[in-house]
Length: 604
Image (cartoon, rainbow, N blue to C red; front, side, top):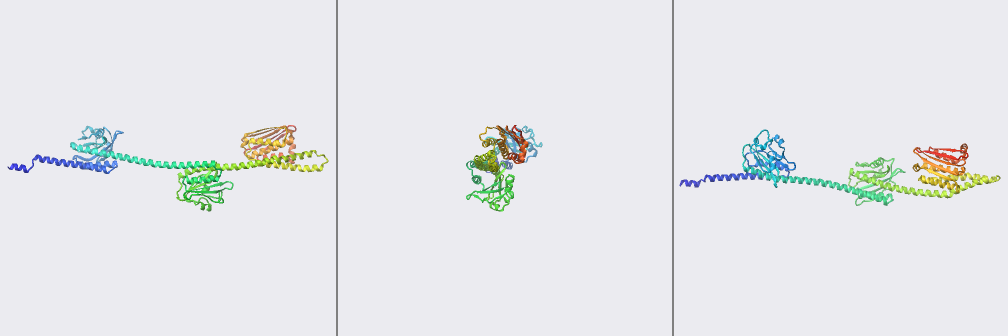
């Protein structure tokens, strides 16, 4: 009875042992769950991969319910592309071990085998385990649990934990390490994806910034091309220099976005900058021209505008320096931070372009300099081309008028004067000896008519345009001969070098005047049937030779006649040649014709 009562009061020993096992299992599961929770908590709170591995490793070493666990361990990350693993996190490891195990190939040592197979492994003693061959540290033995970090069936890393040697770990501990490895594997993959995403976002941001910069450059280039196109159209469609200037300034403010653009043109005759035009942007933007009397003297003024004009280089001003030494112009311009660009074509200054931003105060930079320099070069070509066209048209109009007047005088008055002098000379020869009074009057009229004829010829030649080329030289001399010797059967051969066209204008004119005088002498005195004119140009001098087959004369008598003023033509030819540093050689003899050689140097 007592025995039965004792069995009812005290549970059987077997049931007590079973209860203890259940309690221990619950405690173990609680510790495992605590460890898993600690790892999960560390993984969920950190997105940076390095920080994630560091905190997760701390959580495992602190919370894992493994009695044999030492506060030592680490994590390798696998690079399948290179077949290697790199040490990404570590705790409590000796520096020699870290240096030796920093990088491990898949399949080498215990960790490499786990990384290759994706299966956990256990080592009781590193000193005797062949899996550790070639990978020991300081001769100290240790045990290890190595678990793969798995994500979607793929090994992304390896977790290795150090144990005391020769203590066989419980299979539950291995299973716990495997579960932790799987949990860490998913977190590692997510962190790697996040890192890749961050790198992609950064790359996209960088690419977006570059694209924005490229787009801005393309927009500037497009604006520059539009301005160049509009300037080309202006050059083709407008012959008005002011219209082209105004279109240029409007394009700079409207297309390129600068707040103000000013332009002044150089007058090389008076050495001034004048004709100022201003264009502004914005709602109240307009074109403005200051009085033409506002002129800046190039020789007596100073400042950035004059500096740019003299050097031919742009000048950027950001320190508020006044643009000129003229207070009136400085007051009207009101410049603070601005850029001055000289307009030059073929080393010839055309004017000056000034750009600034008076409303925003934005200073000019290198990008502005590059853009505005390109626009300024194109504008210089356009304005210079229009100016050249205008100058050429004006010059041609003047030359046409001079040619018309010269031809009218030559065809009417000159012919009449020559006929008058010829007739007076003939009358003097035909008068009977007793008509002394009439003869005396005619003799007085003859030199006056000759002088008037000579002066008129000089005036006609001075009216001729500068474009006296070799073809016109030949044609004009032929026409001149026909006018002074109408009906005369005289052969004239002219051979003029094309280099005549490159001679200075004054040299070409003097050759023509000397040739006129020489041919006039041939007609009046030589009684020649043939005349040959040759003009040759070399690098040092130009030489003209006029030869006739006339009666010739004694050079000594000719020299005496020049001294007495009886041969004005020879004297005039010599004076013209000597005025240009040249000389005339006269070769003649009675009955053997005459040769006149004129040599003019080209370095005078």
